Amino acid sequence: MATRIRLQRHGKKGKPFFHLVAADSRAKRDGKFIEKLGTYNPTANPAVIEINFEATLNWVQTGAEMSDTARAILSYKGVLYKNHLLNGVKKGALTAEQVEEKFAKWLADKDSKVQNKVEGLVKNAAKEKIARQQAEEATNAAKAALLAAKNAPVIEEVAEEVAVEEAPEAEEVAAEEAPVAEEVAVEEAPIAEEVAVEEAPVAEEVAVEEAPAAEEVAAAEEAPAAEEAAPEASEETAAE
Image 1 (cartoon, rainbow, N blue to C red):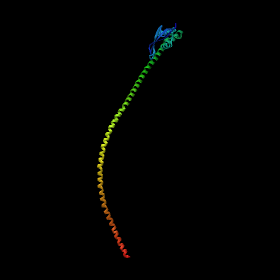
Image 2: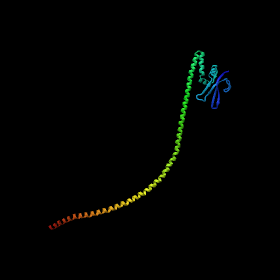
Image 3: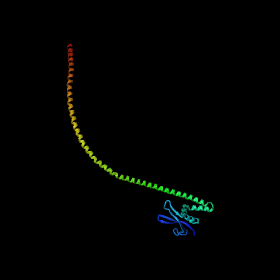
Image 4: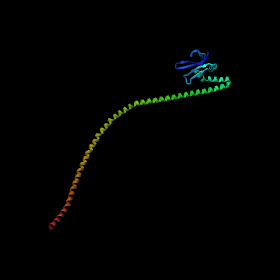
């Protein structure tokens, strides 16, 4: 009878959970088994694997076959590496002390890698949380801007109503001021005409006064000249 180390499926739909068992290779996958060696939860990150290390190593050393997934799990937990070192002891290449030293060093390195992965996952989760918060803030800001844009036309309509109400008032004020300006212009026009009428007779009187004086001067100058010309003519007549 061949013994095979394999997985048995358990858990709900979409949430698988496996048992690592040593069973007869002829048995059904979820049928009878010889010994339960551990559990495997692939839904966690990193995956959670718990096994009975000594019992699993004993089955491997006795020549039990392994499914591909079971082999990967045993390699991850160091069962296959420990089996390799023990085979070296059988061949005389290593001592038991060297095997324990090498295996302890391997476990320390493995634990360090797992811890680094866990820390990296925690950091990534924190970064994703911050990114989600920023995206949510950006979404809220966009919604607020959209709401403000929707409310903006109401403010514009109110401003237009106020402008329309103020426009008639300005027209009324302009209409009231226009008659006042016309009255002032009408009052100032007769005053200007009276001033022009008063100034016109004065100018005429000055012109009349100046005209006789000019005539008297012209007559006085021309009369002696005519008298002088008359004796000269009489003398010429007498000589003839």
